[in-house]
Image (cartoon, rainbow, N blue to C red; front, top):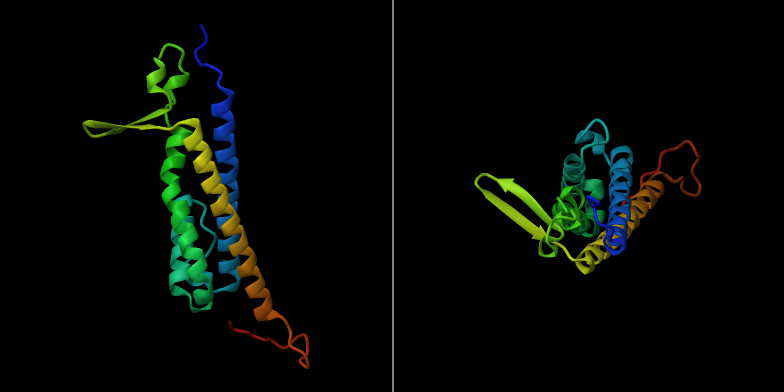
Length: 176
């Protein structure tokens, strides 16, 4: 008897979620890179953070404290908040014990994550439809964060673009 049952709908749903999550993480990196290089982010951290928790914290702190990011905070902070909230479900989906795929387990314990917490255990269940919903949410967040990265890049370019009548080597700073 096989140890794992094949369930293509589950794998497809989980694959979509993972792909969209990867896009969202890449977008956070793009945003943080723009902040670090063009908006004074080095006052917060000397280099781009690698740990996901540190990436979220850098994004939040930069958007809350750097004056040059004030015009972008209203759009960026809700997006990073949504991604931060979704990370707990991501953890359950990716590293959770999917008991329903062990052939000896009964079907009613499918897609359950058991999390030891002292004397208690948390069980979290996901249907394929719920995973697909989370994938759609991750896709929406990723699209928003990518748009935010583009806005940050455009803002940085506008701030350094030469004005008419000035020499190319003269600095020009535009705000707003």
